[in-house]
Length: 298
Image (cartoon, rainbow, N blue to C red; front, side, top):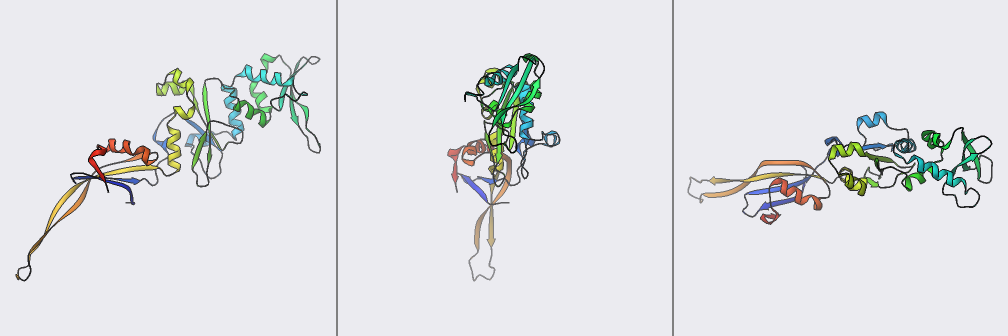
């Protein structure tokens, strides 16, 4: 067994509790059916389950399009682009796409602020045309044709309904993970919770859902971070077994001797405590059936 990280003995010397760092711990997502969805696009690392690997979007951009199409504020998104169309020449535009009504063609032109190959300056150009009234503009098609910078603006300013909560995650050099409330087209990974699914699973109240971020409401994010940082622990409980070793000298030249030795016999163990040890220690002690005041740390 690996070297322990902490060891306690009861004050009466009859039991000891040893805490070990758990090597090769499971991804905590494999040990629960929490309805957290994850997709990532890092070449060397991933926290996706098998189903997600088989069905994931081709990029963060494509996943965001899907989420906005299903959980985005459609009217607010379109109105923002229409309002942006009023400021294409006054320096007050908030993103690099705009919807402009063409009175002669009786439809809406999607504009983009771009510079084509060989051009020296950026200019507003036509991206596509929607031959319909504003209420019939297809949101999925609109999002697909918008620039990355516009999609990022929609994410940054939270053009979401309350039907979804999102977060992004990135991988460090050794695969360690950090989560963020912000998502963008260049995110390494994106995770999300869908409201109806999560509330049915968890019994969480609607008020709790509305008031908290994904990070606040989903404990798995903390466990995943701990797992990638090797902050997973287990404990072993042992009882003291006393033995008497006697040595007899029949020749009478030496005195007979008796020595008492203590061996430790395992009586219980448990593994899979995710989190920094200082924050998990009380949970471990409680699970093992000990109180801190009855223990002495060796």
